Amino acid sequence: MIRYDEGTGGRQPLLTPVRVGDLRLPNRVVMAPMTRARAPGREATDLHAAYYGQRATAGLIVAEGAWVSERAIGFPDVPGVFGAGQVAAWRRVTDVVHALGGRIVLQLWHAGANSHPDLLGGALPAGPSPVDPGEVCRTPGGPKDTVTPREMTAAEIAGTVADYGAASANARRAGFDGVEVAANGTYLVAQFLNPRLNRRRDGYGADRGRLLLEIVDAVTAAWDGRRVGVRLSPYWTARDRPSPARSPGRGAYPYTADEESLAGYDAVVAELDRRPLAYLHLWGRAPARPGAVPDFDEFARFRKLFGGPLIVNHGFGRDSGNAVVDAGIADAVSFAELFIANPDLVGRFALGQDPASDDGRSRYGGGARGYVDYPIWPGHQPPPGG
Image 1 (cartoon, rainbow, N blue to C red):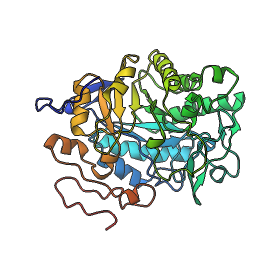
Image 2: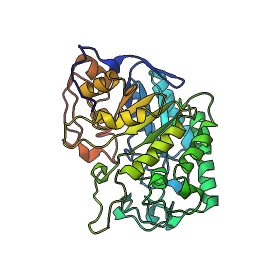
Image 3: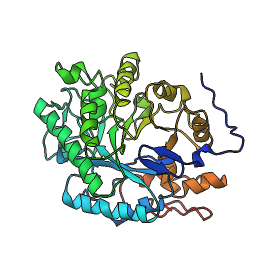
Image 4: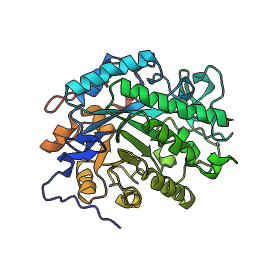
């Protein structure tokens, strides 16, 4: 068992430069992708430009997941990257981040079965098999239980792979430094990787990682060199689900890490190691209690299978982040919640200052309050709702 030791001799490995694919990062503090639901027209706005610009001191920003097509939508007020207007809107964001010296990649997202007819013009969502994922979907009318999806046809799968390829090319036109394929959580690619949701009898069932690998091949084709990352969550369980909670009595939760599912992730990570990726981004299991240290062994398992840069996430703070890099398990650490209320998170780490806490009520939806009004240190930290 790999031990966590807060002592790194006063050094902060997180604050040292690193090369990630073709990107040179001045530090190893990565801003993780976070849905903030502030794009009512499904286009990034000037608020997005301000939000990401404020956080440009991060070694790398992974911008929030963006829909790769109309069929991919599964959350209200989230931007896409499939239309010309969306590309132009994202260009304003990347221009600001670059002007401030930052680096930013865009996460590509498809909800799959974790959507709802209310978000798809009344149509059923599609997934690997007609199995209800048992999730709760945020809709314009409030949280609603997911429904039994349609099984995607071979033609729909091919069209989805093409959508990812086109979205990747659009992200490049929008000025992003690269893209990240969202294969984590409870969404389309993770559904195909899940043996409880993917019950297909074709090649996408016999090889549950096939869809992800085809998407990666299509997405990397839009870039020169290594500009594509992949995010996985092999240990995702019911404990990791954000609110709102699923309704009681919906049956067994399909996202439970066991030897069968982990063996599948072992195989797919080994295949990803053969692709020209910039990095692998792993979301670990939620710590058992608030403030507990993540289990480094969970990440070490996949470090043995992937020879490229590894970014780890979930439950890390400054000390544990420094320790996991110092141990050689990770090349960088991504932070989500800490970046909400701390646009200057890198500076706070460097100065040894405690991070501020955010107001959870303003995480999803709204305007500037709770989004771009958090001050840098030192400064009075009023609660955004107060």
